[in-house]
Length: 119
Image (tube, rainbow, N blue to C red; front, side, top):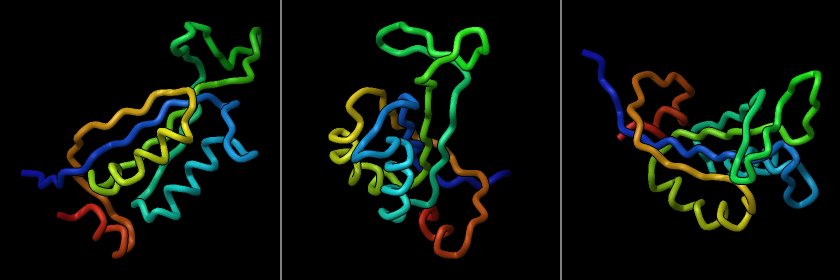
């Protein structure tokens, strides 16, 4: 049987052109999560997508987009995630933020990182 630890996945959907304090929003958020001591964060650039406005943004050569979808994913303890939600509400002006419970099957970071996700 595989042992799992409980954690939470914070997922932030924004656009490539979103900015905060003069820099791309995804870069600001990545640096912010690092300073806050999160176990890790990943920024993913989508090849196509649409949001509330239903405008399709795509990386197609025929139709170049300046606002490709960006997803930032963070897995950590719920206490750490809840602590930063007020900041995210102020910083993410357009986008979507979700939180879901996940089971961590395997995480092999340094000793400091492993302590972050272990109950």
